[in-house]
Image 1 (cartoon, each protein chain N blue to C red):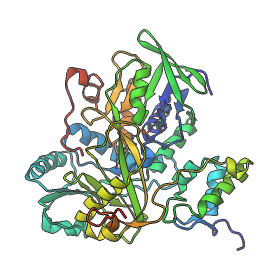
Image 2 (cartoon, chains in turn blue, brown):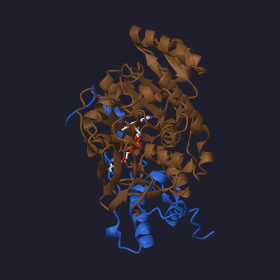
Image 3 (tube, each protein chain N blue to C red):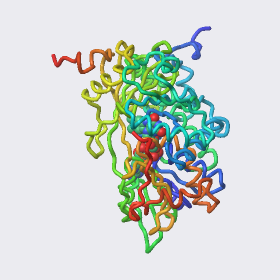
Image 4 (cartoon, rainbow over the protein chains, first blue to last red):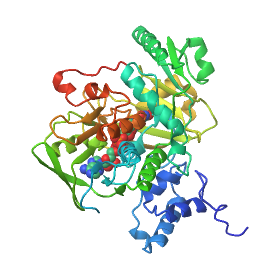
Length: 95
Length: 384
Ligand SMILES: Cc1cc2nc3c(=O)[nH]c(=O)nc-3n(C[C@H](O)[C@H](O)[C@H](O)COP(=O)(O)OP(=O)(O)OC[C@H]3O[C@@H](n4cnc5c(N)ncnc54)[C@H](O)[C@@H]3O)c2cc1C
């Protein structure tokens, strides 16, 4: 099964397939925030480090615009995962 | 965009979209919904999406029980292709002071009168419901299995799409700038994309409800307050229910995908529209939650964000028509629990607009805007 969009994973954290993103685009959903909210792509462990660019490329293709014209969804902190233990008031160290 | 409508709804959160649907279902024509950003971009898309029926007043019991009945059949009724992820994994509410124990005893008696099967939990039974809880200091708890949570994005979109199918026009990225009135009626709504003549407006603007009031010269005493929330990586199942502690002022829950969300109320939060996130919150929240659920110390936070609670002076929503302006309906001031009662709220507003008999008639005299002027605040003992 070559290039089956149901088997191609776009967002590895939330297991979102190419087909799922294509389905949203075909329903006219081309806002990066809407795509994120409906598919959860980009909300997982890596926070969109892989899928964000892929999906922005797909949106650009669908709308016939260049990728830099696609409005990105918001970046959220932290940049890397932090154990809650390190954040607790007993253990938190300003250094 | 149309330049004339029967009803203009301001706000594309769960409340506005649900009202649009309930009105269209009742055959109201020419409904336009306006959203300044995108659907679910306000509190709805930022919320914990917990649904609780363990309330301490008849009004909130009716609103929440009626809403759960709707949530149970919503996916089918709205013919929505995705799962709304309604999981009835319960709310676990621990008590740490004698006063809380007394209050919970009163609440549970009332809740049982309403047919809810709420359990009274002794400290030594707590771990059978929340296996990772540290029972230190715990005096008792209540647990109701039929409370739960849903996917807020899908609920918001499900209502929106069903409304669109029934003919509602939804315009995103369209901001309401003003509302013109003449004597005691509405004439038109002005937006950054043009004007719409109409006589009925629904204020479902969430954290911005007070500014919509200003547009018609009505003082809505709601204000906004940032509430922050964070989420961890997904883990194996650790605990099922929402754990909500009034004593520590936190709530936390493991989502269907295994990620754990948690939030706290901060008594020092200032009124306003700040929607940034802070390290101070992440620290405070981690400290409080891991004290009660120690194994979560190893969980890793991957994301934090915030949203606005639209607070009313008595922490109870305003649901009704203004007494001084015909056709100006308000569904706002949800004070942090609007998602869970959105289904009934929308039914009630639709019933008011179509002059049907209300499912909860006393809403008209108890949740109206004028209660503040009358000095009849609505007192709910069970709010954070
Ligand atoms: C962190 C957090 C956790 C929460 N947890 C829960 C929970 O577990 N359970 C629960 O029941 N509730 C919870 N809530 C509360 C819940 O999110 C809200 O009560 C509910 O979503 C309100 O829905 P709404 O449609 O009224 O508001 P919103 O979703 O905020 O929608 C209002 C919309 O109006 C739009 N708008 C405003 N002004 C204008 C204008 N001039 N023109 C056009 N559009 C405009 C906004 O852009 C916005 O999209 C939580 C809230 C937060 C912030």
